[in-house]
Image 1 (tube, rainbow, N blue to C red):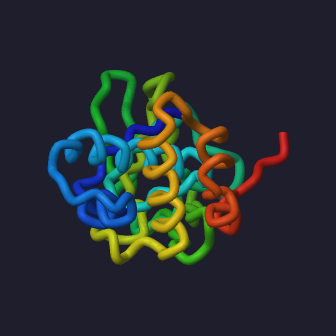
Image 2: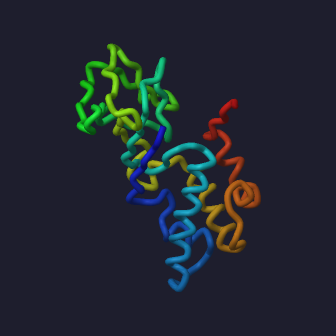
Length: 186
């Protein structure tokens, strides 16, 4: 299973919001703060498994799952297309009538309502195009996630070199992200 995500066009925390949180009024660190916002979003998304700002994604599978397919990066907005590749690498669209999509549950799911065509391409022969995220703007992202990102930005700004779960713990963002984190049993 391979996932390719387009980068979101916006961030869940604007540069102005991050600077206000940091109490910075000058523009000298704007590039650094913008980079920290992006990093904090990526840390949050990795920690929670979510897509915060809506973006297009493509999931590639070698074969169909035996049961319902759970899509990564909730919340699922829609499934735009499912393409199945033949041995020559040519794609055929799998008609939407052949599957049902659940955008309400987390994660979003696809349930086959008929027998899907088997891919002729052995590796990554199935491509699922979908959109995931809370919305296109910062205001669409839940407030507690945005607040956690601002705390992460502040921590990263003051403690250059921290990353991942260490930064989440030290910034106090873990409690804000906890309700959204989906733990997996190994």
